[in-house]
Structures are given as structure tokens and as C-alpha cells.
Amino acid sequence: MAINIDIDYKTNMNEVIRLLLYRNKITIAELARRMSQLSGVNYTRFNLRAKLENNRLHFNEALLALEILGYKIDLIEKN
Image 1 (cartoon, rainbow, N blue to C red):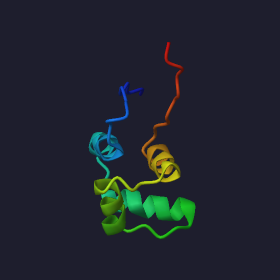
Image 2 (cartoon, helix red, strand yellow; image 1 turned 90 degrees about the vertical axis):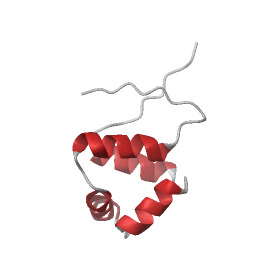
Image 3 (cartoon, rainbow, N blue to C red; image 1 turned 180 degrees about the vertical axis):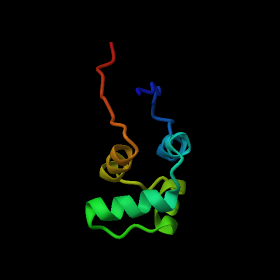
């Protein structure tokens, strides 16, 4: 299922990921566990939540989280 979210420079990745966590009924703890499993990097619910709240989630981490949640980012040229 596609979700159209208009993202601009003010959009916070925390908001996007939390919305998708809620929609998919997945906890931050479960997301952290899956991210650790796929990446080999140790994520805990505490450090993942801190990264989200402080806007310190790296782009590759956001892509991994979105992939786990079943989404991807499409970049579309603006006219």
C-alpha cells in the first residue's frame, strides 16, 4: 500500500517513522531488534528513540527502518 507523504525541509523523520510504526503496529523495540538483525549494528529501543527524538538518524538508518516497515523513498524531480 502506498502512502503519499509530502516531505519538505521541515519534515522530521521522527514523525514519519513514528507514523509508520503506528500504522504497522510495531514498537520501537521491535524495530530496533530488526534493524540490529539486518545491519549487524546493535540498536536498542533507547538509542533508536534518542536518535529519532534528536533528529540524529542517518539517512542509511532511515532507509533501513523504512525497508523493515515495508516502505521506500522515491525521489521525484520537482517541476
